[in-house]
Image 1: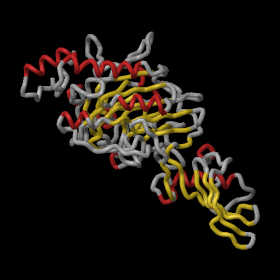
Image 2: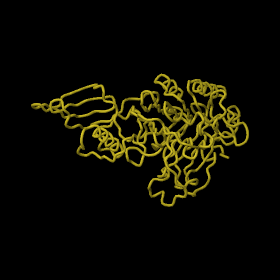
Image 3: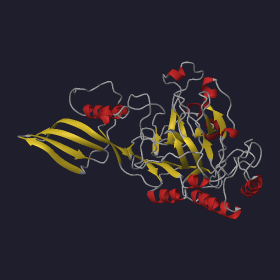
Image 4: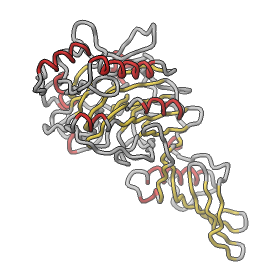
Length: 431
């Protein structure tokens, strides 16, 4: 049981009763009256549940009425699964080290956009990486198990980022089969089982980073999955121990949408996506693999073998966003019948060298990161044993890094791509 840090025990008891916070909760730090403190969060939660396409919404207030009293999700009427969250330490599950995790390892704030929040701490013990999860056997083939063709998804997380850039929520088991120093003594090896997830930045620290996978595993011959987007805006770092008024003003609304019809994966921070490009992608440690996948797909369309072409490159890993409409064209140089053009497309920017009208060379000079073009279906595990859990706060992965730290005040999943107006309304709830 987590003990109160509040010096005013009577105030804590009154507020805890009015909010129906269980004995596992962290002490409340509100200073409002009970009436004022419950009405706003309750109305905010109702706005989330009224948004069309909702699959599950954890506000960290709703719990099982009996038994373990785990956090459960708000789900549509008639749903037979409210996805109770288990506490787990994936280091113990896969390396056989460390202790079991319990709800006591997730301090609770007793305030937030929806009335409560959990804290993901910067654990010092390398054998302890706790998260909350819906195990695969409890979600397989349920509405939360979004996968396969003609499926879109949105994930929205209200959070305060203290540090880190890794996972917030989703079905994103990265696998424990990667050759890392940390996997030398691993007891349980599993292939990646990625579907969809929202991260706190990854390659762009603090952005809203959406991630999807078509195969559960890697992309473009890199060992990591690389289909991801990054919002233009960046969330600030705020100490999780800040004063209540600072925390109240620091909530951010992270979101990702995958629209299967537009084939676009988009990151949103506080209802805004923004246009983000990566210049000179061939120089990036990870996106250089997407750059090579672009070139290999282009070379394969040309007659004969091209300089730099790898004929063994898997065709399903080519990355060639549509370039049917030139949005902007600029002639950089022209001499005789030879000219160099700069061309801007929706997802790519090129420098193309032509002799007459025949292309003799092309350079991919920029690749769009937001939105990211994604032409695949979401990975569809063949059975429950080849699919990952839905996790909050962390994901299973080989490197065992601490990841995101901070407060998480709500997690919502939708089976459609929310639009800008809807995400804007959800973002306002952070206030």
